[in-house]
Image (tube, rainbow, N blue to C red; front, top):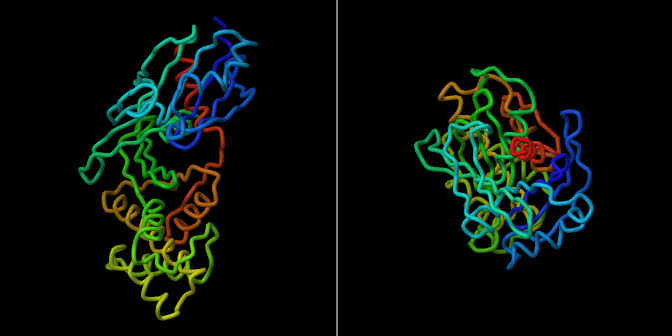
Length: 309
């Protein structure tokens, strides 16, 4: 087996991204990328994988493969379950199998009891977490709060190289559901571009009044529209401001009340939403450090690939 080359893959609900890598002189280089259908759009995972990766096997032989994401869920190629937090990357074991002469490992997600005493799970984003946590030496008592913005926002408490716990904000999905399936969405035109001042008005409502819950602020999306305080084109921006502002305010209030903020919040991502979260944390009075490394998930996966060869 060629152990200098390996393949790592992020295989989520809506996309598959495979990366051909090589280990040279103790470092990892990314040689090539290829994409494909996500788990929800795929009926035959083995065929989909080899349709994408076979050209690499033709050139480099049966190199090892490490995959993460929804491909390891109960609707994926193998159900790998969830590893319990607190946990560091060196304590996680994947599910190993062989097909067509190729050794494949699919990593589990993570589960925890979060700071509210509730169960939570993550699958896929943990590779970005470990990609950042393992990127440099960290003291065992070094505490960080990490934010991974997305459709489901992950707020993570880490200690040293260890993921302690996390909780999930659903504002991306909530916005979609409210606009498409609720009274609030009647007459609202959904757009990816946020418009001011409507977004800022919604954000400021949540930042400026700690007694105002997201649930009590949401209906203003409807009332402001019928009273013509905003237009169908800008109403979604107000709604986004309420949801994003409420998510950030409540997450920070939860961590601050537990004395868990000891430095800048680490915001991982290169998307406009990640940029927005980093800026809004600062607007709320919390220093933020944005990590714009697009290869963090690959680095996290590579950690497991190198450990297996």
